[in-house]
Image 1 (cartoon, helix red, strand yellow):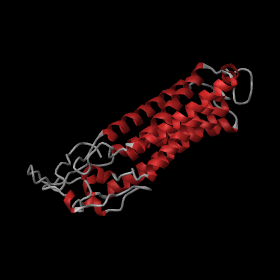
Image 2: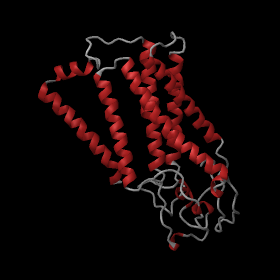
Image 3: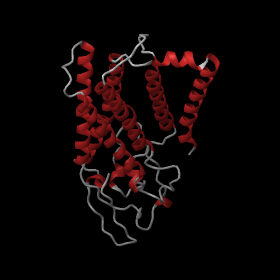
Image 4: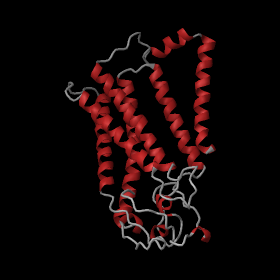
Length: 285
């Protein structure tokens, strides 16, 4: 549990530093500086559709989707979970689906807001639009790949007499292997490209300084979370999170897919009378 609290301490320290600056320099000058556009202009005004386009895109691609990726990568086995006696905890799965779906819906809403605006001009605007459509297309392909990931399957359960059920995930078929390569790589590429698109958008609208600082701080926190949790070995293989480390399961003989994915070592005492009998068949994977 301590590993998950480290980034919270970093955020608290940053907030304390900001409060200290306000108290030292006086709130009014600092707030005035933060509210001015990055270029230093005295005024900042945006048409409402563009303003809400930016807000929805930031909420979806800069906030919701990165959190969804962090949850899927580092929370497959929870700190409070007695793994491997407790398997297939769906907390990460439910939050991942919710956050990614929310992010994509917000992005579609953002597109709708600017759909009828005049065609863009200028190199940076053209790059922003092209990158934005690329990101949205990648997001759609992520959803499609999830729908085409195949069946789950399940091991035999001696305790209940349930026979083994063939499935793309449990058997780690070629279909599942291709899905994991495409889905994992595509997700990281889409989010990183969305961040570059967001930077172009901030430049184009000459965003206020506070916005640059808040988004930049969030990116630093997200990167620190990723680095710290990765360093602590919290990126557990999905297959082991669901079915355990017993080599009797066919997927445990396949090399983990994705960079930095960790496999836990199997110990004979971990095997149950049903060879991880508590792995239940559920329609996800």
